[in-house]
Image (cartoon, rainbow, N blue to C red):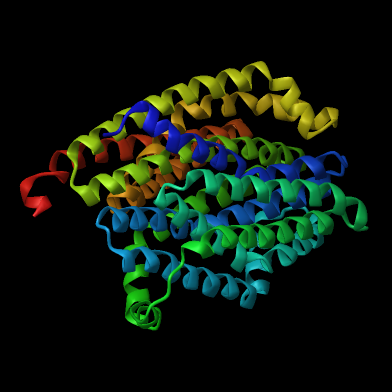
Length: 437
């Protein structure tokens, strides 16, 4: 039976791990921001957005791996447990290698869409080119973490993520002084840390791997990969719309000037940290919901959603207090530039409001991942992007960057409300006799 304590034992490592995930972008931003070179700050900020959105596009590799692994364990199917690792791992490396093959189109498209200051273009090219070489390993790490989380080995997942981020911090601080170009140093440090993080994860996973003739046959089964990708189609579409929103947010901010772009990029790093914090709670729900579905336990399902909602509420309170009390210290951590600090302070209120609006979306995405149904998640992002576009169209011309942030909060609110309403409708039939049969 699920209790607050058992939920917390799964959730807290995932919350800490989720909190640490966007630190790759945060550390890059902090280190480069302290050089007080606005062009470099903007270049790294744009590059970080490119990779956050690129990796989000294939975030299903982590989300679905957790859900499928938890369900396979609930059914005590050893072969399915193994394949829930191997199959997405193959896909991760194929996709990552494809990024390298299409390096130039990816890089130039990003510059065309996101860079409005020509002086920034070469630095953005350097950052994107350098980091793309680590893409197969970054996506592979998603799979390793998802598999471990599905097993409930959340502390191990935490060790891997924190270890990777510590390596990134050390290499960032070191390489920014080694390289003549600070942007190149930051990019190379982050790429190397991503490769090392995958290696660390593989050390933990390899002892649990078993090969068999059946697994070898399944790995060569092309149809199984098509089926896997079809199942994850909705999560892919969901992330396309999330990518479109993030790209639009960055592009609209860039039109307000270099300072607005830099301020938005720094504040959006706060949003990444908060979102991943909430996502950790959602991933804990994925594990427990997956087990509930595998065991056909309505009570476990109900308690998981109830306890997860309480964790979201208390997290919102804690995050809001921290953001409010530590505002000056947080901003000073990112930059000493007086003009940039003033711009960040102008839009800081929007980040304080975000936890009240965006938290539930992360919880319910975890719930639907555990169920194995991503259609409500897909639809919520489509509705939210439509709302974002309408609000931005109406308000940005009149209130500028405040309109960009208001459109983003309306996007987050639409996403949360849509998922909450869908989950309430779904729970009424999920454990009905006809569905269970």
